[in-house]
Every structure is written in structure tokens, then in C-alpha cells.
Length: 511
Figure 1 (cartoon, rainbow, N blue to C red):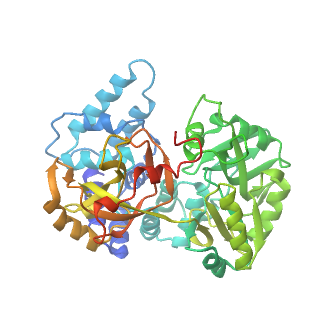
Figure 2 (figure 1 turned 180 degrees about the vertical axis):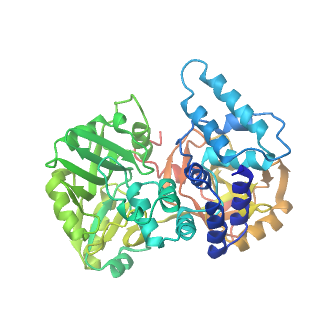
Figure 3 (figure 1 turned 90 degrees about the vertical axis):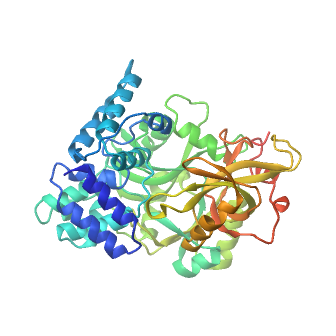
């Protein structure tokens, strides 16, 4: 199959809001793929190449200066082979090899194909071809029930491999996909609620658990062999020897555990999220020690537990992990759950997750069985600039550059604004149209991708917190920022200050 067929399908999917049309377009594409192409194509569609991260940054891609092809000739298989070569390039001279490979690939691609490949490589393909829609498309193309495809994908940890099985393996092959110690499973996800009482009203008798501000881990053990995976199913065993040793001490010969890891300070309180993630992503640094907490168990000593209720899984989990069980209280009473959530916040954690004790482990799904509750912080910030959107947002001003007031010039913008982050989250179609129509009235200049604005528009932004960052002059960045609405009632002078945001940094981080 030619790559341009994938690109055209992605454009069609991004141009519609209809889930049915998205599924139709994707199913038609999948049905035309050969068995040697399907895993690569699904990787392209989800911006998750079969080879994993290719180690290519934004600068390497944008610095390329080539004359692209005028005729589409690249095939899916050829691009997949080039990604193989990029993935294995390492050692002395590898930078030059990568540059040469990228240059050749860019030269052979049309402008549209290259734009698509850049988004695939950077993991920024926002077209509406999310895994849920693509799962339905795989089911339709292969003539299987969606639930069968979804279950196989969650147990194998790979929608791409599931698509190959669904499209090209004999009937019954999907049903043969099961849990396998050592092969990561897509993690179960949580919905959100505004209050703990709202969450308990949905889940009933619940396990109310600390929501730790760390990194999700999935741990597999068979005998002495322990493997640790991230939320995205990347293996990081070599980075976390302390977790490996702890799990080797558990009372189980084979086990699959779901949990979180984070670093603690000398007082036993959680260190900054950035500290945990820096240590989590390091191959050599051992100056910060990670501790694991586990909140679920999927398999133990030959028994699969994902279909068992949480009440049964928790009992087995407590037996296996002992003191490494995440703090929790079992209750169906909202007032008890609310008090426990206060304890979680007082201990320095994000909030709580409320989980139905009757629910099974729905890997890869975000349903109402798990509900997270975190305090929502809102700040009034000023729009400094906006970026032109892509996909369904092509032609619309979308991603906002956000600034906090620097009233005394502590960060070099006396009376002006210090950039603290970007977001396109929370923008409705109506807001996108309004921004595109209104922002030119405030324009002070532009590049091909960004329109700079007078610092006059105030927008209310919800965040989950802040973290240290050297990317912005204020030394911090917003976490999970999303637009709540514009505040025409407020002047820029009434915007929240960089000092107010920095006060959210954990003690010792604001210096």
C-alpha cells in the first residue's frame, strides 16, 4: 500500500466529527492492507511506530531543508523499513547516519506525506483516530465483535498486533490471546469527578485510595526474573533496581502488579513530580530512590485475576505486597471517603481514586469503575500568542501561549507577563471560531505557525498543579492546563502572578 492512502485516510478522519464515518474510513483502509503492512500502518495511525521511540527530536526534523517529491511513491513497507534503520542507528557517527536517513526519507515523501511522518515521529498525530475508534475499525474490517478485539488488545498490550490477528489469523485466534507474565497489559484508566461524594455515589462500596503524584508502573515477575514497564508499556527494568529487589521479596513465584512509584523526601513526604520523573527516566542516576506502591494484582501463581472483583483482588494483593500496598480505606459512606481524601491531601498527595469493589480489571478502558478526584486549581492568565491548528483544526487559531503577570520584574518582565505554558485543551468549536475571528484584531506579528498578540486577553485556565521547568523564564510549567473560558470582565492587570504560581511548587523547589 502507498503511504499516501494512509495520509488521505487520516485527513478524512480528522475532517469529520462523526464516529461512524471515522470507523468506516479506517475500516476501509485496514481491509486493503497486506499482512506484512498492518502492524506498521496501525503504528502510523496511532503515532506509535512499531519500532518505539526513534530518538528524533523536533529540531532535527524542522532543520531539514529538502525538496520533497511531487508524486507519491513511498509505500508503507518502505517507510517501516526506514524507521527500522533509524531505530538501530547508534554509536559513533550515528548522528550523521540519522541525518542522512531522514534527509532521504523526506526527499522521497511528498509535502503532505512528510508532514504526516513528522507528526508520527513526534507522537503528535491528533486526528481523532484514537485507539477506541481504531479498535472498532479493526473489528469491522475483520468481522469480529468489538469486545473480542478490545479484550485481545488489552491483554496483548498491542492494538497493532491485535489487528494483524483479527485480519489475518484463523477464527478463534483472538479468543486465544490471554494474560502472559512478562508481556505488559494496557493499564486500566480512571474517569474524573468533581467531588469525592459524587464518585462514591457512582461506585457504591469502594476502595478509596491515595492518588500518588508519581509514575505508573506495571511489574511482572516469574521466579527470580522481574520486569518493570511504564504506562506506555516501555520496559525500564534496568533503571529501577530498587523496585526489582523489592518485588523479588514478595510471596509469589509469578505475579503481575499494577502500581505507582515516586520518591520521598527525608520526612517521608512525596518529592516533586519532576524529581520522580527525572529519576524514572535516568539510566544511571541513583541519587534519588524510588519506592513502589501497588494498587492492583492481575495474576498470581498461575491464576488470572482480571475478571475477579476488586474486593477479591485487593485481598490477594495485600497478602503479596504487604507494606507496599497503596494506602486505602474501604467504604460506601461519602463522609468517610471525604475525610480520607483530606488525609491524602494533608500527606502531600494529589487526591484520591475511588474504585468499585465489585468491578473487574478493565485493561485499557476508562469507565466509571475507577474515578479520580483531585482539587482543581484555576488561574487567570493572559494570552501571549496562538498557533494555527492541524487536522480538524486546520485554518483555526488553536494552541494558546499563556503568560502570568510579573508585577515587580522578578523574572525580567516588570509589569508584563512571563510565559508559563501552552494549551489547546478545553477549546470548543465556538471558542476556536471566536479566536480565529478575534485574535487578528490584537495581532502584533506572526510567523508561519504563530500569531503574536497584544497582552490584553484574559483567559481562565484550570490546572492540576505546576512543575519545575527550565523551558520558561519563570522556572515552572503548568500541568494539564485546559481552558475554562475567557474573562472579558478582567483586565490584564488583574491576571494572576508568576509568584502565585510558584507558590504551588513543593517546599524547597521555589528557591
